[in-house]
Length: 62
Image (cartoon, rainbow, N blue to C red):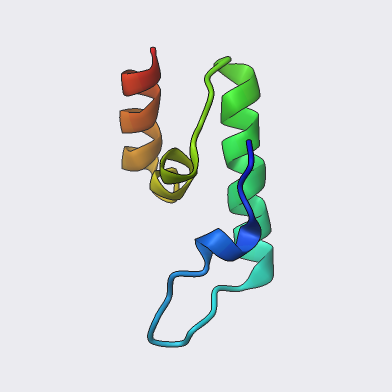
């Protein structure tokens, strides 16, 4: 997928996102990619932070 956990650290007020949450996010994105057989780019992965984003990405990719 080519996504680095550091790409997901976008909480500018605290300058960090919990490493575990970022790891889980990447794991969810990878599972979606494998389950639905879609190629996700970095922007897609970032959009998958929310359920709505996941649904939008899957709709676009199908």
